[in-house]
Length: 281
Image (tube, rainbow, N blue to C red):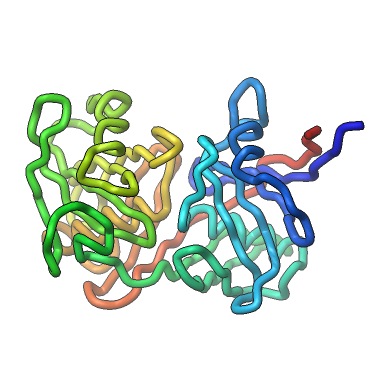
């Protein structure tokens, strides 16, 4: 007899996840993520998120990419996690702390009619040292506009970790015309990145807004990436392109990122349920 797994599909600016209450459950989550996130043969999603008990925070989050690899953190996933936990009264709210592989994170939520509609995540301080990102380039300070050869051409990459590694590239041509499906996997698996990397391409709209497309490590192109939006905002502030608050316009919507240049990075955006159901294992 097959087992049945209850789930909720959620999305934050188009970044979609299968949410599973995994408290007191023991499964091969990596394999399940690979099966359940597939379009056509599974439910279809960018990742699988499990909700578990924690001894250091209100709850613990694990996130598995669509290819089965486990990620350290996910900004949009944290917002979905907060809505799931508060709407289903696993915690009281309106705020909660979440244990992740990248440390403990605090999330503040806004509700209407008894349901969370927005969330603001403290993503922590950006990591800018090469060895800690990690990237195979020495340096204690920001590594900006590093020439890297990809697909026979040089591109300028800037590096930061938000608990997971990111390579950010500002370009003059439209991000819509950039061959991300070709270049994205080459950057992700470049020898510079011992743990692979996420990759963001960016257009400057004005001093407050940036247009971004994202290639996520272990997933591919996604409509949104919370940590990626934070990475772009950090690099743009370091390059004096934008101020402390920036609107990151991504295919799935707009995320608001705030960083004073020294302390923690804050990510804010909408979040909603898509549907719930039962998956036969």
